[in-house]
Length: 260
Length: 220
Image 1: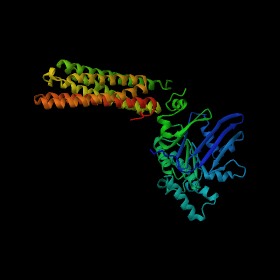
Image 2: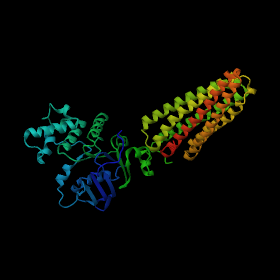
Image 3: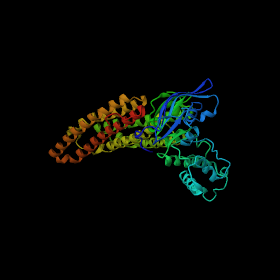
């Protein structure tokens, strides 16, 4: 386990009193949190506690839902991401996302990774694009498995490989933050272990936020953990503290399996 | 405490706690009877203490198996995790306490000329103190009482003071009566064993504190 030191630098993202509504229903209730640059932050909590909704607010993924409304401020490097001049496409390149079910494009493995850098103009010419694709696939721990079949469809890969392809795709556009929404819940234990190993390798290079239903996974991969319940963030702290000695009774009941 | 959604988990923990309580009772009894056997020179009682130590060994392996199984099956968190870890360690410590009592009981028939040994009057008092620490630390365990655990830790100083005093006493005794060296050496080991039991009671108290509140006592 990584030793939990106090973050040295300013937080990568910070939210102040963020609430998210679906119509009249409040899904997230005044959440204030700083997401550190150098650590993996895990969001845990029972289904419907608002953790995924809150995660999606961090790169304005909720914009696509007509009834969704966000209050409060969310800053990336001190800039409000909900300000009117914010380029949302650019924001989602800086704050990438990996979803629960691997969702590769129905295109070749190469194209899956090359698509982002190409539309964002991050690579000049074929050679440079190939370099970016290889680098991203290597960083996602997938290169050795796919280097001889880059033209095959991304959907032909196994679930675990597809998820790493999606991570490579997120990495390819040089994000600063990677949001992961239950990235292993559709994977078997071996594929899960590979993703966890990958998260550990990516830590430090990117600020990573992961939503997970597996408490053990949160304990293994993260250095900071936030517990959500009924839309509120109940407790946030060093992962080792949360799992061995949580301050709040509700956190304790949840992580020890006493949640009613 | 609120019950677990999985009922069998509660049953596992209750069973584990029961095993520790049983071990604690046996360890305390072993110290008391070893002292009794020593004072009266009762070899039969001494042998009983030695024989009964096997039960502690068996219980310790039961605690181990139970704790490992619970860790594997339930992947416990927070106070549950601390509870299992504490039981695992306390089980090991109580087994050692039993070994010290057994070691004392084995020396019962090695003391000659009991009536002449002044230190022999100090040892039972020391034994009572050590057995009392084991008794109270298990009460603290049963009640999840960090205050009582700290109180037990403080008592270890008295056991250490007893040991220093008995040590000096025995050394001067040996100097004056070289013929008693063999018996005195046995008494010295007995006092040493009791001193170690006090240390072990302290270790248990630290685990009780940790299990109850998540931190070790401040002056650990």
